[in-house]
Amino acid sequence: MSSALLDDIPDFKDEQQPIKDKETEKYGNYNVSQFKNFGLKEELLRAVKEAGFEHPTRVQAESLTNALLGEQLICQAKAGTGKTAVFVLTVLNTINTESNKVECLVITHTRELAQQARDEFLRLGKFMKSVKVECFYGGGEPVSVNIQTIETVKPQIVVGTPGRLKDLICERKALKVDRLKYFILDEADTMIEDLNMRKDIQDIFLKSPQEKQFMAFSATFTESSRTSLKRFIADNKHIYEITIKPEQLFLDKLKQYYMKVPEALKFHYLRQILNTCKLNQCIIFVKSSEKADALVTELKKKGEESVRQFYGGNRLGPDHQKMRQKTYEQFRNGHFRLLVATNLMGRGIDIDKVNYVINFDMPDSLETYLHRVGRAGRQETNGVAISFVKSEEESEDSKKQTDEEVLQQILKQYPDKVQQLPQDLSTLDKF
Image (cartoon, rainbow, N blue to C red; front, top):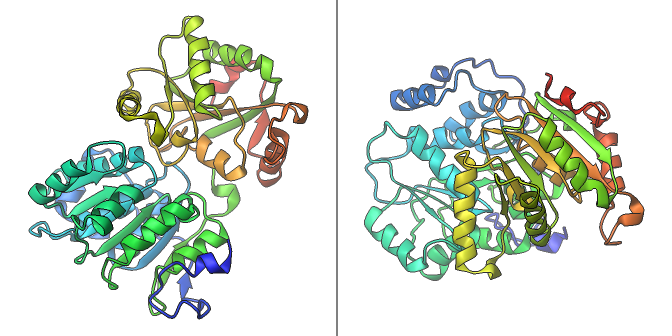
């Protein structure tokens, strides 16, 4: 990422000046064993208990105290450890429920993640009176309907995707953020490294007050994305930055395997896994929408009816967008067991019953691998991830890393975490 691009990020100072080293604290262990120790409202503690949260996870213990104190926060947390609850509880604990102004803005990169964050606000805020949460994203309701909702509901909390929020805030000026207290980026790295999304976020940010709390979350951050995010925080603000070591990025109860297999035999071995292992729900990742359609068709030919495909694309039209929404909701509610998906499902999505992830097509980077396999084994449950690795001779795009190259990166970074798939597949379910 060039310095010229980095200078596009607002930082409330002359953009030609170099970034100063802001005061940053990378903090250690917090001994907070119960949610009541955070000083949360009784209504929130009641909702936390009903949601089944017995004790704070490590990331919650390390970040929630300082988030509640209003600190600027850049938080790296492995998938499935409750980072969403950190900003949800922080906002709900201090939001003015009598206000008719937007006080919190949460930006995510997909509509599914936006809906998930909205649902978490509603779940943990269910015992609070007058909390109003709305969700806006492209490909769903028309902008005119969004504007009508804003005018009638007057939400205090808004969750959405960058493009639609920019349209509502900057272009149509229908959503006012001049009273904003919280500016939150979920899966921040993927948005900040995408030039279009980053520009939308920047434009939205410049419409909000300078004095507000900034929080950014993801399982993976590059050095360049961290640098870019810090530009959103004024020099005189203290930053609490939570980082985790690479070997700690995987979930504790996630077993990972790989299998070197020719492209022509992938489907054969996939069926063996599906017929042998104890799948609650499984996400099968492929490289394209065309591959997803083809694989679902083949599975149905073999008698697998409990399967759907899931992928995005703005050019696919409103009918596809509605079907995508329906598929997501049905899978989340356990209506079918297999979802063949592109990377659209690879980040942030939390579906409790998913205990298997299969990389039918190997991801093209270590970072994408981390996010994909993090869909299984969430919230201290058992999970299995299996990756099919084809030979370098079968690689189709010379500009991208081959399956073997990505595998070697994974094995080098995590030598004790990923093993060759055993012949006896029944052992995969033994924990």
